[in-house]
Amino acid sequence: MGLNFKVELKDVDESYPEDLSPAEIAVYISEKKTRAFSADDEIVITADTIVALNGEILGKPNDKAHAQEMLRKLSGSKHEVYTGVTLVQGGKKISFYDVTEVSCKVVTDTEIDFYIDNYKPYDKAGSYGVQDWWGIVVVEKINGSYTNVMGLPTEKLYNELLKLI
Image 1 (cartoon, rainbow, N blue to C red):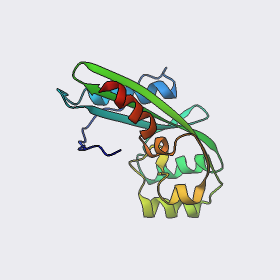
Image 2 (cartoon, rainbow, N blue to C red):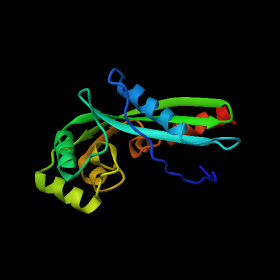
Image 3 (cartoon, helix red, strand yellow):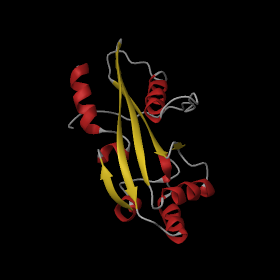
C-alpha cells in the first residue's frame, strides 16, 4: 500500500469468552491486542485470525500432534477464515472483520507430515499458511479475500485507514 510502518510484537493473552461467534472472537482478540500499545499520534493496527470449521475454532497449534489433528480436519473440507482488525489513533478506534471461505482437497497423513516438517506452521491459525505449500497444493478454492486468509484483509484495511485519517 506504500505505507511506512514498523512491526512490534507483544505478548497478549488470546483467550476469549465462550459465547462469542467466530467474527466476534477475531475482533475481541484484535481489540485486546491494541491495549498492549500506547498510541499517541501514531496509528496502531492489530489483527487476529482464526479458522472456523463446522463451528469449531482452530487457533494456533500447540505442537506437531495438534497441527496434524487440525490439518486432518481441514483435509477435504470447506472452512471459514475470520480476521478481526482494530485501528487506533489517539482517541479514535475502528474495528472490523472479514471472512473468507476456503475449500481444501483431501490430503494424506504423509503430505500433512511433509507440510508440518518443512513449513513449521505453529504460528498460524488452523496450522496452515495459504501463501506457502498448503495454499499452492491443497487449497482448491477461495471465496473472498486472499489477503484475509493470509492474516490481514488489506483491501478492507485500506478503506478503513482512509476513514481514520
